Length: 169
Image 1: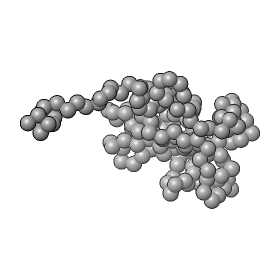
Image 2: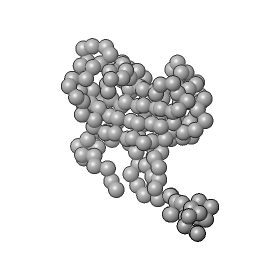
Image 3: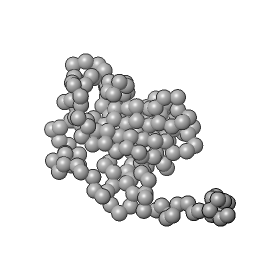
Image 4: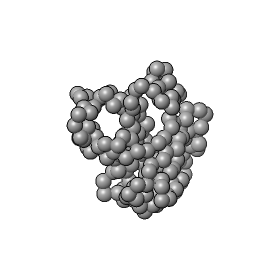
């Protein structure tokens, strides 16, 4: 099933440069993190969804939309090493969500930037997992993957005598 992204937005998202400023909001959560890591791809902080998003440059491509499960790569600068150290300490995949909003949806005269009304999310990628994380002095890189349902065995569970003894009486 293909995502319904308007072709005009898709062209803007695929361009290397455009007149439309888009801000990416990245949330990384894990049971071992006290609070989720929330960063905005701009150099300034934002207030959105009653949370503060720290201005922290990062790069990613749109998720693939082919036969395999959705996948992309992400790169976050390891400027103060907090994100790198936090992700290095995690032993299982972290959950990730990315939302893209237009910068024009926020009041640019204040810091942190505050929304003008209720911002419209232009693109959202939820239920992703951060895997293959690599941390060095300059950047934190990793793959964002979603669950690939085509790799799910069917049936996932069998009604065996050990699991369902009442069926075998």
